[in-house]
Length: 326
Ligand SMILES: [Zn+2]
Image (tube, rainbow, N blue to C red; front, side):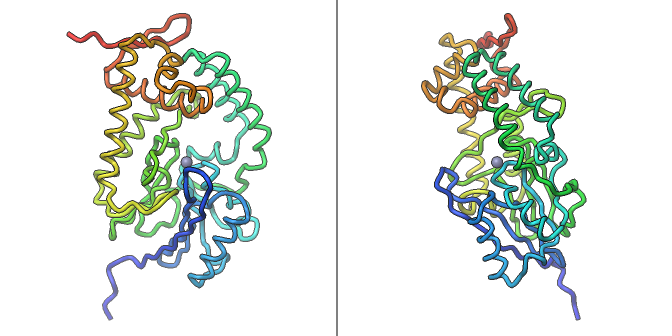
């Protein structure tokens, strides 16, 4: 008898509709050889638990058949059921190492993170609005303590992926990974690329409290995806991506367009982060402060890396200017 050369691989999507712009939260059962892995674990709540149970039933599995959980990144809409599953059925949970302090809501790390944002918003001239955001983060630290993932975490390199590869795609989150299935050209991408919305590059510190160039990282991750012979992407939200190359191109050109607009605002005299954010986003600056500042800070760092703008520091505040064109 000739053995098949291809890896026996099947997957079962679990998709729960949401009322917000995410449209759906998606997670996946991956059956690889004698492993049944859960890639991501939805949000907390009965709808997610029922959806998992339903998909297990339809694919003729039981909860006890799951051999491990792999998380694409630490955001709460991707790890919601971990505690509930592990309480009933103790299995290993794998994630990128950078996800560990975030998933476990490690007190020292979260306090360093809050200090990072306090200093960050000052550098970008945000004062009152920045302080309000820092107060919100301090309240969230207390309020969200119960969301800490209580399972023992293992680095994703140790996951029994048998033929699948875990690829690191930082940008949206420092710990974002995707699972790459080369035989069929399928990527389980988490939030690295979403069909109907652009995946935000959220400003974050590294473990030492230093700012990560998150938009630059996102661009590099998108380029890395485009360099794979990828046919389909199963994302953390929304529908399946059937033409990943075209979507990457669209996202990259949108990032460049936004960068060009920021350069033109700086040329017109907007100088600090707050001034640039206000001239770009108007009242959205107040309403969606942390997202707006992530976008602006990501762009400013990226434009500076590319040598398209200059930065000087006066009294601890960043001032941006156009690069003198010769
Ligand atoms: Zn996310």
